[in-house]
Length: 159
Image (cartoon, rainbow, N blue to C red; front, side, top):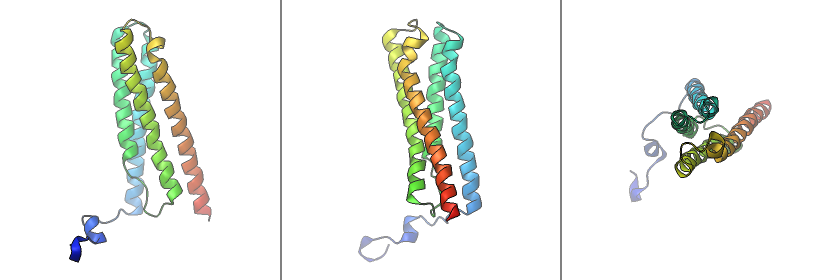
């Protein structure tokens, strides 16, 4: 600590050295693979109740798989994978990807809520109506933010 209780930049970083470009690339690759696994779980969980209609067992398995995929996706998107040299726009777009996970989380909440309110034999479409809506919203946010990140990075690398 320096005088008057203020810390220096070195102390704020807890002595960690910044990541190299190669380490950042590897971390980004791992995080993208983990996020993709979460999305696959979400997709499979949405298809599961329709593949075996009116089976309460598969509805239960599906909702837990959806919630697990959502949690995996959110954790992967909250991890900071950007360089310190990235522009503020790219950082905001990376943050926007996390909001897709929160849309999936809202869908998971409604799956649990609707199944508890309607009962296990209400039918998959009645139970999953809100879940499908939030899953589509999250998918659109993810698609748009991914495209914009790629577009923005290409534009910044040209200049």
